[in-house]
Length: 77
Image 1: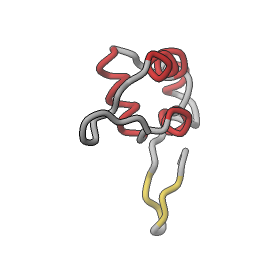
Image 2 (image 1 turned 90 degrees about the vertical axis):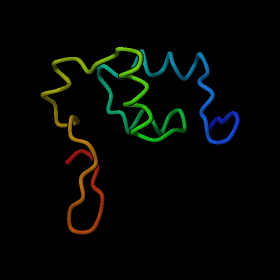
Image 3 (image 1 turned 45 degrees about the horizontal axis):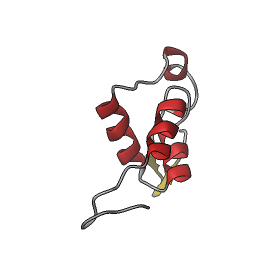
Image 4 (image 1 turned 90 degrees about the horizontal axis):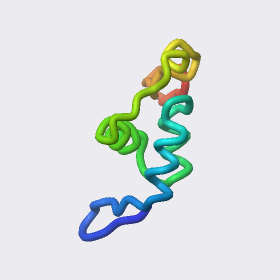
């Protein structure tokens, strides 16, 4: 994870481009893994940039966020 002063993330052009290119059709957790930040950070930055998921993504199996089930976090539940 790239940080500046304290724990503040220093956003590179590549990180922002990855979010811009992939967020509409890719789960935020996958993007987070790619660029080394948290899932929540990707969702927050996408909102700041005005990027939303495509309507087709919103109906897909990947729309669900991590959910706690049986004491474990399950991706894509």
